[in-house]
Length: 207
Image (cartoon, rainbow, N blue to C red; front, side, top):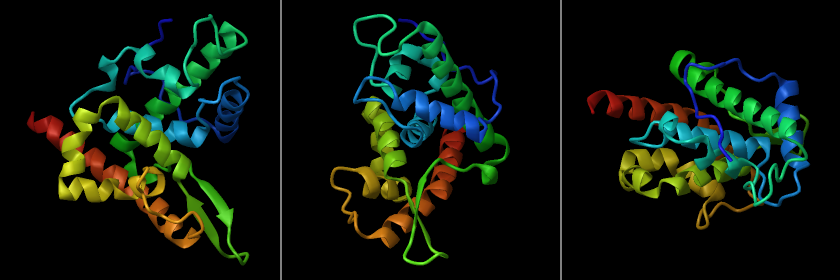
């Protein structure tokens, strides 16, 4: 199955809250255990855009899109009930991807990742938990481990990636019950991603 490539010049309108919910629901009803939710997808797309030394537009869509819904399987249009459902999901994903890249390039401080939030012990406390987002990001890393290796080996860039590893890495080490620590790590991710984006852009300019 062929899918459209990422085209930086395509529609970059941010998804509305209703469209994000639609996307999350489309993924949730698919008959596969491997489908991401909207949070994991958001992290995955961020990781794809940040992959060092590679432009996402150079990859065919089939190399990365099917991972969002757990793969296509052997039957067309599996795991979708129709080609129309698949097309709608693909178009929403691509639009969200474009909007992330546009936000980072044009209005970085206005970018917000899709995280989970839970109420604390009192009404004024709310904890962020970006575990699903971080898990999606690491799936993008797994697609190009050689490209990411220098960033994990460099002390400065590794420090920016540390909250993601802490939340979702196999040896992350953050206690599931430590909501405050998970909140702190989660809330550090937006600034870390913008710093990595700036690093990536500077590296590309020097290449």
